[in-house]
Amino acid sequence: MTRTTPKLIVALLVGAVALGGSVGYAITRPGGSGALRAADSLPVREPLVSTVGLAGGRVPWYHPLILTVTDGSLTSVTATDPDGHALDGELTDGGGWTSSHQLLPASTYTLTATVKDKAGKSRQVSLSALTTPPSRTLHAVLSPGDGKVVGVGMTVIATLDRAVSTAADRALVEARLTVSTSPAVPGAWRWMSPTELHYRGPSYWASGTKIRASADFTRLRLSDGTWGEGVRDTAYSIGSRVVATVDVTAHVMKVVVNGKLVRTVKVSTGRDKYPTKGGAHLVLEKTKLKIMDSATVGIPRKSPDGYYEKVPNSVRISYGGAFVHSADWSVRDQGVRNVSHGCVNISPADAAWFFDLVKRGDVVDVIHASVGPKLSDPGMSDWNVPFASWAN
Image 1 (cartoon, rainbow, N blue to C red):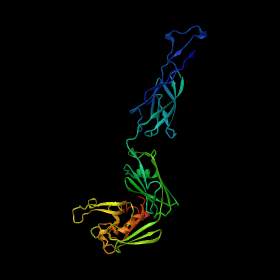
Image 2 (cartoon, rainbow, N blue to C red):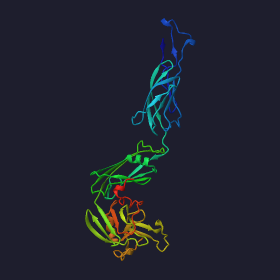
Image 3 (tube, one colour):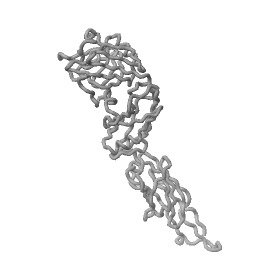
Image 4 (cartoon, rainbow, N blue to C red):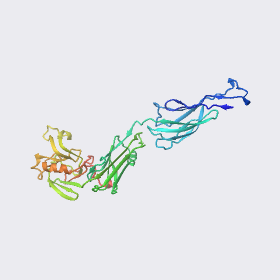
């Protein structure tokens, strides 16, 4: 008796694929005396392997991967994810197979299956399954950017494109964020909001410190079904140590570079109605010509305290509207009294010098102020919390 190889059709994702051979058996009498009648032939139907519950030709990632067989059975299945990790599963009583672990979204699984038809003939086949993408994803952006030189107060900032609220999910996110420094310095992350984390050590960075940060959200899954995506890296360095100390009551700003006093500047800070907030501030940005509009801080332009000015050499130290900037209108008050709306007013010449000197992350420390820092403001959020209380 001789047999031809039965044809196997595998239907996975996008229909059936014929794998060769002819259908049925041709059986001859012993000694070659002639073939049996057609009615005596024993046709074997082709096994059909298929998946269950496809969505648009893909396997839903939140369901198990299920293989079923018609007119046959699976005797073994090996499955791997795109990283080569095994996807475990179990053969079912009906001759199929079901994965036992969570699938990854937007991933291609490679499967090798051994299929046996009803006559006991086995054949190994290779197939693949593509899973659906997640409905919610999470990405991170790291700052400062690659190759930047920043000030000693500049923390590492991770900004997320989706809010993360639960303590358990935040721990998962933090576990995917790494920071290394040279020389080595202990540090910790602090959640400033559901979408932003900052990393710092016990004190300002030392000049010359090299910092490397990474966010790897590959295969990160949060409790609400959000999946992390992507790898982000940044490497930057700490430049010269620039600390400007603004004394609200003495009306001066002392600028120290690498431990040396380089300039004492006369200032006028916020008057009683609009006091300058105390505490360590950071240089956030510099603008050569800044439009300052009182309406942006809740003061109507046409009110007695309103203003709309084009101000040169403006150095932002808070997102609440505080700047160190040129103020030719208050030169006679600088060094004498506080008349501003909360900014640090300095002369045009001093403002041009200060503007050229400072960089993002340099420190402006306001002392003897009548009000404390606003810890929710990025300009004041990083260094007005003791390191022992920093990690939350």
